[in-house]
Length: 73
Length: 159
Image 1 (cartoon, helix red, strand yellow):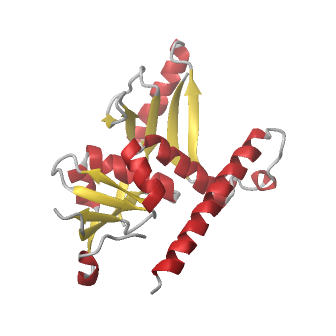
Image 2 (cartoon, chains in turn cyan, orange):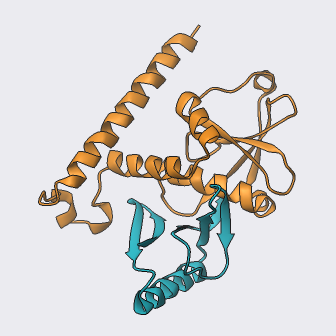
Image 3 (cartoon, helix red, strand yellow):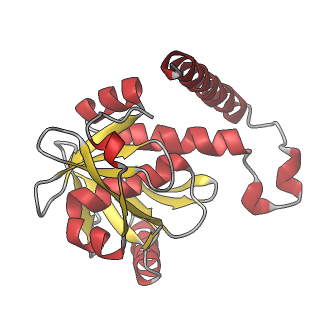
């Protein structure tokens, strides 16, 4: 089961999907495009634990984290 | 003079937060329990402490073992900027919590940036970590710079 984690005011919202099902992957890809289009950054963790930013949807990613656009404080 | 009471207060707060996190996990397991606040405002379904605990749990999942150990004991962790190789210290908080470190490991300048919207501290720190580790220049381009008081430059900050 793969997960897309979206940071929001509740802490985070998790969307789990079965990466073996085509319709679930399509839905996850659509969510990815919507969020990145709205300014969110998508990041995944490599096997070594390093964070990597993704510009395109990766259907093999176990866990993708989305955080909103950065602004100066 | 105030260091000892400050440390004690910090320790009490840490214990309180971890207790809140534990209670939140217990409540979440009780799926038949209705949260009264969820009937009125969907966005505020979770209480403040639960949101804080969720954010911190997520942060800890993404920290490296070294960063996790550092954060657990000192309430801050250090990251390396991907472009310059400079070290940055991210302290617990949501704003004015990033300090660039000099060669001696002392804070020399502060940077302030955060994800847009009202996010909990754990989420903010995680976004700051990923931004500095993967797109340092982009993050610093939007950030505001602030100066660390001269008196604090030569000391290792412990918040």
